[in-house]
View 1 (cartoon, rainbow, N blue to C red):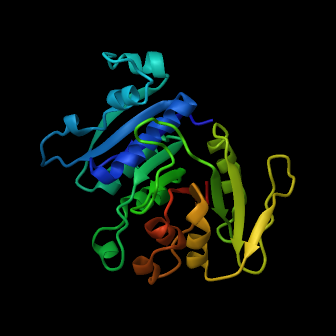
View 2: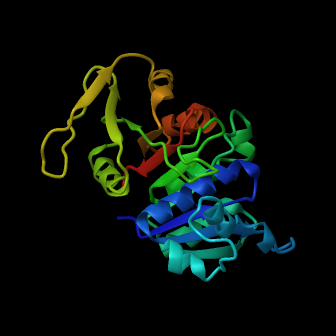
View 3: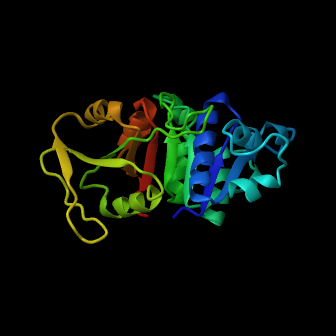
Amino acid sequence: MIQSIAHPTDFSPEGQAAFEHALYLALANRCRLDLLHVHDPRADDEWDRFPHVRKTLQRWGLLPAGAGTEDILALAGIDVRKVEITDIEPGDGLSRFIRDHRPDLIVIASHGHTGLSRWVKPSVSTKVARETIIPTLIFGPLSRPFVDSMTGRVHLESVLVPIDHTPEPQEAVLHLRALVESLDVGVDFLHVGPEAPVLLDGQKEPLSVRRIDGPVVETLLDQARQASMVVMPMATRRGPLDLVLGSTTDRVVREVTCPVLALPAVA
C-alpha cells in the first residue's frame, strides 16, 4: 500500500497531467501528497504557482464549493504539503529531499530532451528515479493521461510490463503488485527476444510472459500503443553512446504514448 507520494513540479503546463495523476493516486490510497518545487535562491518566491489541490478536488466533485484547505484531509483523506526546496540545480535538490524523506512513489513530468541537448540539460525525471531508487511514474511529452482532467475518473485498462534478463525483473514485479493493488487493471508481461525470463508471483507460482521478436525499443513502442501504462525496470546506462541515445527506459519515456512507471532494478 502506498503511504506517501511526491510530485515534483516546475509549474509548466506539461506538468498538469502528472499533478492530477499524483492527486488521484493519493486519493486512491488515502495517503500524504508532497508537492515539491526547487526554488533558485536568486529568484523570487513562487508559492502562488503551486498546483491547486482544492480547486481540482472541487472540479472532480470531491469537495463542496467554499471548502477550505483544512477540509482536504477531513473530506478527501489526503494530507497535502507544499514544499519549496532551495537549490540552483533542480535534479540535485529533488534527489536530496526525496532521499531524506523516502516517499513510496514519485510522479513527475519529463520534457523529453533528445540528442546533444541531453548533455546540456539531462532529464531531471530519470535522474531522480535513478538516484533515489524509488518507483517513479513519468509522463513523457507524448503521454496520454489515464485520469480525466475534468472529472477525475480513471481509465486504466491494461499495463504493459516489458522484462528482460538484465536488469533482473523479479523484484520489480513484487513492487508492481504493491503499487497497483488499489487499481483494477490487467497486466501483460512481455519479453522481446528469444528466451523469456521466468517470473514468479507472490505465491512462487510462474507468471505468464508473452514473447515477441523484433528491435527492442521499436517493438516496445508498437506494443504500448494500446496500453494505459508501461511499467519497466530502470536499467543503468551501459556506455558512452547511451549518454546521447539514452537507456531503453529513457528512449521509451521520450517516445511512448502513455505514462511509464520506472521501477529501479536494485529496489
